Structure formats: C-alpha cells, structure tokens
Image: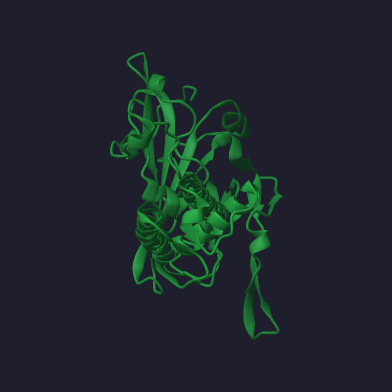
Length: 316
C-alpha cells in the first residue's frame, strides 16, 4: 500500500493481528470472500492442509465430485487386485476377454465396497476372500467418514449474508459518509447483528513505512434484527482518518476497509460471523445506494436482492 497521511491516531487499533511491517505485506489483507490473503509455506503440503476444513468449505459441486472420483478410484484399484489374483477365484464370473473380466471384477468391487453384496459373485480362496474382507471394512470406514462430512457441511453454522460489491461516499447529516450495505440472502432469522469496521493503510513513522489500522466509528454498530438490508454508515468527521479525503485521494492512494459482521442465528441457535473488505479502488465517490425493499399491496415487504449492488451517482 502506498503512504497516506497519519491521521486519526487516537482511533488507532493495534490488535488486528495483521502485523505492522508494511514492506513484508503484499496485496489486500482480507479477500472479498472473507478469507485471509495469506499463502503459507515452510512445511510439507499435507502438514499445511486440514482436509476436514477443506472438505467442509469447498463448494457443493467440488465436494460431490471428490466423493465420486474417490469412489471410482478405490473400486478401480480393488478391481485391479482381483484381476491380478485371477477372476477364476470370483465364483459366478466366467472368464472371457480381459475387458469383460475386469468389468465384472470392478462391479464385484463396488458391491463389496458398499456392502450391497447381490450374491451372484462370491470370492473363493484365501487371497480373494481376504481382499474382499479388507475392502468391505475399508468401505464401512469410508462411508462413515463421508457421512460425517455430509453432516458437518449441513450442520455447520454459516452466516448467509451478502456484501455490496462497492462502498460509496455520500452526504449524511451535513457531512460526508462512507457507506456499505449487507443483506441476508437466505430464509434465515438473524438477531443481535453487530458490525465493526476497520481501515488499514500504510503511514510513515520516523521515516519507516508501517501498517496502521484505525477503528471507524459507525452510526449504529448493532441492530436488533437483520431481516432487510443494513446500510453501515461511517460519518467522516474531523475524528475520522478519512477526513479531508477527496475523490482523487481515493483514486491515487491505497487503503482497505475491513468489515466484520456477527449475528445470532435462531435456526442454528448459534453465533455466526462473516467478514469482507473494500479497497479504495472499490469505493464509489459521490453515489448513494438504491433502496432494496418496498411494500407489495400493503400486505408484505419485498426485498429485491438483485439491487444489493445498485447505486446512483449524485453531486455534492
């Protein structure tokens, strides 16, 4: 990040966990999806990866694909073992061409792995029987793990909250204000929602560039229920580190606005949290958000999620 003026000292936050050495930090602090913009090295790959966390956090399509590919590979491996032992030791298979023999061994493997066991093919001899028993045990353990992962993915508390793509600078009660918007996008019930906003930037102290973080005061840091959209407002007063910033300042300088949201989900009966960030390049100067909700025949309030990122330019 480039050097900005050292403002808002009394709001400085030294407990962010991001570190202060600006020369050793690259890019943004928090990615748009809320993950930390950090790449870890120095240990073997398998020691740096938690497979449980990975399997819980990847997309549903990737999760199902991994399960399916693993299923095929395991059965392919056991089919190779049965073929090497000899399909004549699988009673019910009449040896024919290699392709047919391997195909029959593969489907016997799937029946053993899933413990279905249709019965028209059965192992004969020690090696075939031992392999089948090992595969059956491996299948039981594998499906137990897969079941746990499925349960973990469905039961894990998750904040179904969306952030606007951009923040805006708009007039607010006689001053300028930084505004961003969030909204729940699922049929969840969130109460006691809290917001915290920090500003990260690089300043010069004693001729050395350091990362500084500032707490940004917001109009409301807590609301009772989050059912519609919530526009989080930081009035840019004289106490704000953004005080005096012009449109050119946002274009020429680099900074990052980090947003933390926490709420209580009544369905999970648990606290959920989510975070995101906005670079200065993602702040629209002289704009206001378009209202997302309206009434329908005076009977129900309609929340239009497609308008989350909608804004209109204004002059001030």
